[in-house]
Amino acid sequence: MSNAAKEFVPLDFRRLPVDEMVRRGATMATELERRRSVRSFSTEVPPVECVEIAVRIACRAPSGANRQPWRFVIVNDPDVKREIRLGAEREERENYGRRFPVEMREAVAPLGTGWEKPFLEEAPYLVVVFKEPYVVRPDGRTAPNYYVNESVGIACGFFIVALHHMGLATLTHTPSPMGFLNAILGRPSNEKPYILFPVGYPASGATVPALLRKPHDQVVQWNRGAK
Image (cartoon, rainbow, N blue to C red):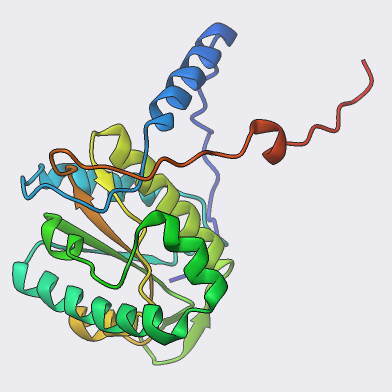
């Protein structure tokens, strides 16, 4: 299918009063201050519609040449979740046992993480995001996608914010290597696992590390013009 724009349509942009812009931004900033990665999930099942809505929001992300090089696979089958957990723990046991350099082990130690991943079965949903470095055309020829990591990363950011906005928790889990996900989920070779998201409500009494964010002046630089 050609990706060329055959026509242009009017932009649906709605300008807001300045005070409304600031109010919305401040409200969102306050809401996202509470967002944390969760590793302990309730088995209570939230509405699947919320997960599907979050995927629809993710798919509104910009992408290189509008190729939309992503695939979201939603899993709620307990047997498949069990397979995924076993595959992830097999790789993570190797990672924590011998693959990770000492510096990385020291970096993640304060987070209390290890090779055990019970949340992959506890969470009601697993959403596995695959990136598509290239597409396979009906005639068997391949065509590259562009800015794939950037595009899929932005889509995943949209997905995380959408889940939090609807009152759900998640975690960006990246067992490495992740090729076992292709086999378990029956995905083709032109799709590469990118991030695995457990999705659900936090477990009652869930705790998170007491982390500090970098001060604002360490992540922002202004090059101000003359007044």
